[in-house]
Image (tube, rainbow, N blue to C red; front, side):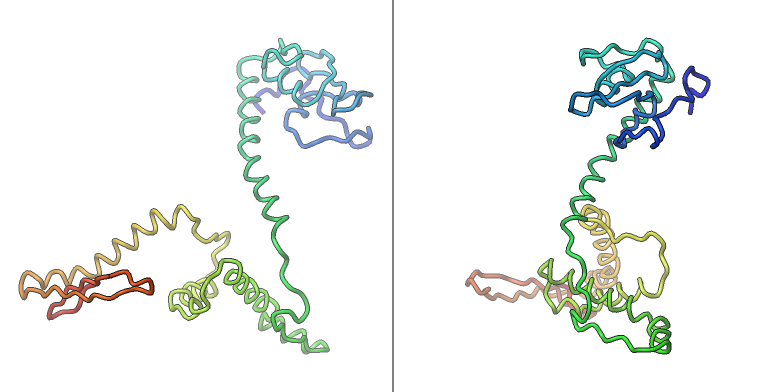
Length: 249
């Protein structure tokens, strides 16, 4: 750390042998907890590693003392300043920024339903004996079965049409993941799908259709329309550009 030479640097939080329970708050590492106060509310008797003054209070008072936040019922530290204060604030802000994502992950993990066990979802029975185990491992039967369950749950929980399983794009995506080892790969998120990836695919389609458009100036084209009604009897019209090269929707 940038302030290794400061007074009291070696004083960290007490070891487990002291018998005091601690939460995982960054700034507890910069005070020495002497004891837990008799009153409830998470108050502890602690001594600042920098000014060596003793206080009684919760983590909020530790934060106010070290980060020099006034009007919180505790004296601000007179020994901290300059580079030390800047480093403490930076470390504290980094921890605070991570809190929301950690809390969201914890809620998702708590709400997530575990995969079915045993013969659920027609899980094949394991063969008895060492030979059966070797075959299962060599063909990855357990991993395949787990992947099938994860895919099925994706369809069920998201209300996807079962016809989506017949999509060649879904099959191609799945095969690409199976055939290529991509450490740490995470599927594209919501924002990336609807922005950059959508724009890239639009450009890709326009590039593939450009040869058809190039023939229009030489040989012309015909504009065709096809009118019909949907199940609610609302009129719809499809517009097609037809030329000697191909039809353009």
